[in-house]
Length: 337
Image 1 (cartoon, rainbow, N blue to C red):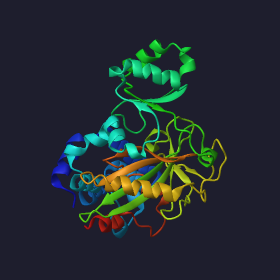
Image 2 (cartoon, one colour):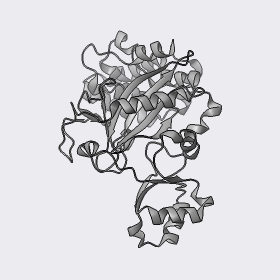
Image 3 (cartoon, one colour):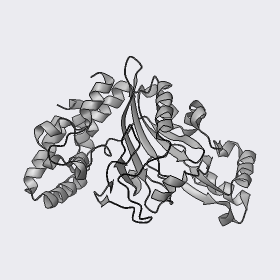
Image 4 (cartoon, one colour):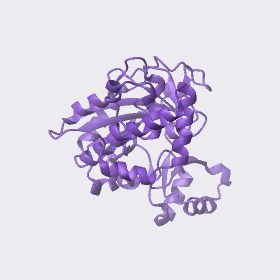
């Protein structure tokens, strides 16, 4: 049963308009009675810590009780974060400048932060990099990120600098040039690998899940910003399935490049695994992390780490075939629950 305090907070903070809208959507695609869906949604929230988005995205409406017990829900994910990640150290992951400094060994690109305190250095950076990425310091899900070309500002560096400051784009980074094989998937964004790790009390690191995130016409690849995702074999780096976006649409081939997704071999996979394991071993106060990794022609590099990893990409309803189980048992084993 979910934590009572968590349940109370969710009840008072719930967007009931979206709750009913989501229930109606599930009722239509499942063919089940709308009132029955309302009741089951509430039950799954109480029993499994599953929010109404979980109920839809993970597909609780078509799972039996044994399957439901294996799903990593929002409520359970919150408990893992609370148990494994000491909140006083979250700032290392929230603040992109701190993250880049702590994990500088794995950051291979040029960057400056905060630009509002380093005007001259920032203008020199702009002169050096014709195209670059500008990010809000505490942005999430790819929101607020801009891919900027100096040419669009006719090399008016003062004007461009003011644009960055006015829009609180405090971190500027050299553009990552991804590996040519990764470009075959999608060229609109860097297609990153989400690698989720957990460290137990014996300081043993386990890679819990590996997924590729693929852009779809935007300059970011985030699942929550229009991108798509697919599971990757943790041993080989081969994509195991068709990609899916958050609306549940499946993609056998990328709609822009036409590249077949299932069976695609991600290059430099062993190097990526080694890097995240080493990075995870350096983070003993934040033990449950979602790492975003890019594959470049020169090697692998860290983009960022997330101390509150999302749980929705692990178990998407369209993947829940008959008899399928969730990822929760593997999580429990890794952290010694």
